[in-house]
Image (cartoon, rainbow, N blue to C red):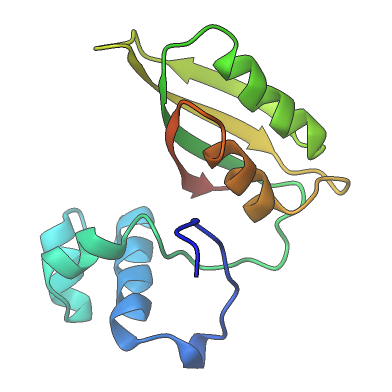
Length: 147
């Protein structure tokens, strides 16, 4: 098995309970039913360390992703043309770039976020993210939000 970061859609009943509780805790925080991670984890019955371990890697799938906005966060090397290469991937998958926010690079590494509109013609988002992650100089790509 390779070390690639792949994406899977798994039925809820196949997931360990801790992952389901992480999603539940994230939903509590997103809907502001609780204000802190501690409150969310106490309410769903998991440790904060479990929450932080999985929070960026598990999220609820919504069947109707079309017309949604997905915000991605990146960390990448400050190399000429790298951002352009990443943006070409977004275009190749048929998504629409709404916003780009980039920090000033520190130690030749930049942090940025990109909001992308998923259109009816947009390809597989998980493949798009995987393609971005494979770019030489991209340290990581994570899905921050889906609206």
